[in-house]
Each structure stands twice: as structure tokens, then as C-alpha cells.
Length: 321
Image (cartoon, rainbow, N blue to C red; front, side):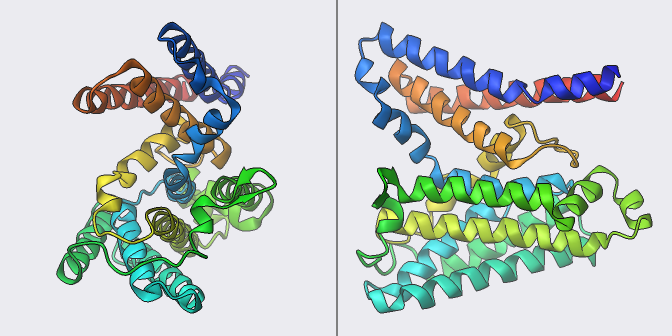
């Protein structure tokens, strides 16, 4: 009963962190005379600036829920953005072929990661790191600057609006909802939690654990590819460094954990991940309002990430006890 109560209370930790960060953001904005940053449009923009991270983190949630991880997402984002921009080359008629090719590449990378982990029994950290290096090598050998151009029609993904809400933010919310529905109401979602909680027990219960792991990595890679498409739309072109410079691999893992998903797998969800993205956005905005320089900002973000992970590690120990 104690453990059950602890588990219920732990679900509110991300929300508590979000409210705390929001309160600090408001206090600093008022204290520094920057109340203009408290408008509804600016608050919507807080999350809007983290769309690529949010999309990537939704996919990373699936990988972490099965007690795996994916370090190839940052380089896959770069590959997807460059490939989409290169294929489109400013031609609206090439939007659909470019999107299909990018999604196909994401699927292939996800299947490859899953097969290496399940069939060759390579540790997910090493397997996906190797894939990241492979993707980076292929990218560096082919491109060294912005490639191609995104037609104006495709830029609506990043800059368009529908019913007063940005298209990209609406897409992120719908993606989160779709991921939640899959995890909550489908057999595949149930298998995800079973495999992440105890792979051996899931296998004995008849769950196709290897197939579940492969599909989870495919979803993770597809989300990274979509994030690459979004960044190409936002930048109006693809660049081979946007994924790496955005640190989307480590930051996606960080927001998933801050959102309450256990690194050991089997516990957590995508709504918590979305809260984690919002917390990260608020932290960046707090640093910007405070005038923290770029180097100090990186140090402080690292401290926040370590503190959050330590908090959840301690929480997990209490729950298991």
C-alpha cells in the first residue's frame, strides 16, 4: 500500500517542477521589468521554440519505456533535414516525395537499431551510438553546408497557423495524444510496458519482445525524422549540423526522465514527457531573462538535469523499497 501511494504521488512530481519553474519565470520577469514576456502569445512561444525537441522526445519515450535508449536521433534529424531540403530544392511538387523518402530512411534506421539490439544483442547505448557515427559519416561525406531549399508551401509546417494556434504546436499536441492512445489502449502499448518492466516475464507471457523492441525503435526514429522535417521547414533549408548542435539526443533523454519516465523502463508516459519539454523551455527562458551567458547556461542546465535524474533515482528506490 505504501509503494502504491508513493507511485501515485510520484506522478505529480513533474507537474510540481513545472509549476515551480513557471513561478520562478514569472517572478524574474516582474523583478527585471520584463512583464511583456508574460503575454499569452509569448507563453505559447515558449513551447513553440521546443517543437523539434518535443517531437524527438515523444519517440525517445517509446525507446526508454522498453528499457532501451537511442543516441542516433540527433544525427538522424540532420540527415532528414538535409535530405528533405535537397530533394525539394524549392519545388512544391517534390514535397510529398521528399517526406516519403525521409520517413523511409527513418524507418530503415529504426529497424536497423532494433535488429542490432535484438539479434546481435548489442547494448542499446553502443548500438545507437554506432548508428549515430555512421549517419554522421555519411552526412559529412556528402554535405558540408546548407543543402537545397524548402518551398514556401512546406514552410507552413513551422510558421503556419490554424484556428489561432501554430500548426507545429498543434501537430506536437496531436502527436502526443496519438502516442498516449497507443500506449494506453493498444496491445502494443501494453507490450511496451511489459517488456520495459520485465522482458523475461513478458516473453514467458507470450509477448514477442524482440518485435516490440524493434517497433519501439522504429517509432523513435520516425519521430526524429519528423523533427528533421520540421527544422528544415523552420530554417527553410537543411544543414548537416542542426541535429548535433541542438543536442537533441541528450536533451530528449533528459526531458523524458524529467517528465517521470524511468530510465530502467516500464514506467512513465508521453504526457510527462511533454511536461518535461515545457520545464526545459521555461528553464531556458529563465536563464535568458536573467541574462545568463551561454557558457554558464550550459553548466546550469547540466546541473538541473543531474539534479532531476538524482531526484527520480531516489524516488525509484523509495518505491521499490
